[in-house]
Length: 296
Image (tube, one colour):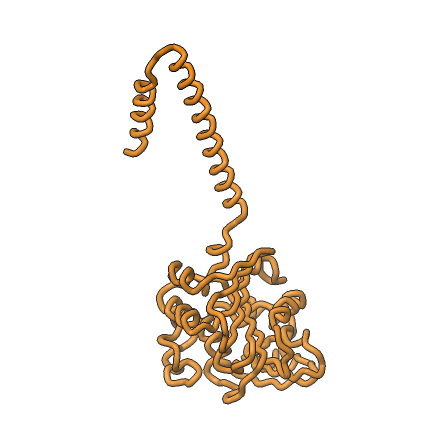
């Protein structure tokens, strides 16, 4: 059997919605790991790019669906397993203090064969068969050590899509597993211009807020506010565009200036009426009538 070339593998993965992780992005994922891990695990490791940014002494573990792809990985301290991560868990029973992942976006899978699997048993439902994104995240959560951290690159649709995905997302928030959500602009990948997101998971957190990051801005959002937004986790909901804020501030400023001008005009009218011995009431009644018309 002829071995696949890197070019062919890249094209096949691109056709399936699987994209390569450039080193700069791998380093960015690594920057959210705030512990000194003894080992790093990538459940959909591809060419091993996410694992390659870790030191030679760090133990590295990876699973990859494509066996040919796995043979291309030449990393020190690497242990690999070829197989479908969701249906054939190559590291069953193993916990990792650090997990990094870039799972394939919105691929199809069969939830029926995972119903009794311990990795998914605690969640109230499984994601729909057309979108396995949250299934990969549940797998990652299961393998995460209680004091560990997982950093996952994902398609942003998982942050706002409803139905079963919404139920799973709500469960993650209620269980307090999500520590941070980061917006990643489009154009980060070599092979696609779509935007993505980073989700940071931790167990046994001592806070209940989630930190949202968008560009240079961050915000710690309370559970109650996230609940009010139907557990939507899109950073743009909690960190809207600056332009919109600036327009609001400009509008507020314009209204304030209008009220100040109106007050000056009324003060002047009052002074004139007093000097001429006239009543200001008819003028005020006319203003009141005009303003009242805008309440209709």
